[in-house]
Length: 90
Image (cartoon, rainbow, N blue to C red):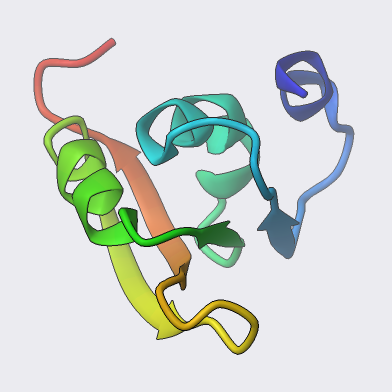
């Protein structure tokens, strides 16, 4: 996935990944595609979605929205836009 994201020749509109890794790591993997101002990341997460978002917010600047899952009452879909590396990160 990392190699694909780094070498993708165009721009992505939507990036979706399920059961790949915690959000903080997932943002690192998808950053080459999400750094475009119009791209949206849609990441289905379980009952710990808020915790994952809080942890990722320590390393990343982003506009994030939590959307209720229709298939899992405890799950959320984290929608990410305007992703930037946090201050002090490479």
